[in-house]
Length: 126
Image 1: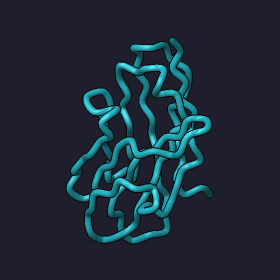
Image 2 (image 1 turned 60 degrees about the vertical axis):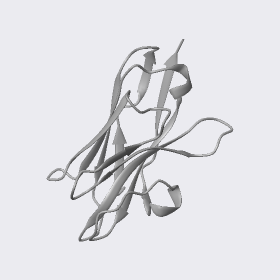
Image 3 (image 1 turned 135 degrees about the vertical axis):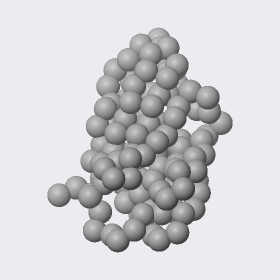
């Protein structure tokens, strides 16, 4: 089975909202952090948001701050990304990422995550 399963992508109009979910079934004994990245056609995969697993500390890219909210349900091993006031520039494939470990940390680089979801398409029409 896939270790990170994403859902919630779709097509929305500018100004609308969407909520992404990512359920983890990792063969690890601990989780350090989970995050969201996105990749638009022809662009590099970029950081969107992250949350430390134990403490719940969050961090966001400047481009989404104030519009997106990352959260997690530790018991369900699920991370969410609530996206409000969506813009056409938010159109991308969104990827969930996980960093196993026993200590919390805030990680901004895709190279600091070990597991990735399959990606879910978010399209925002103008």
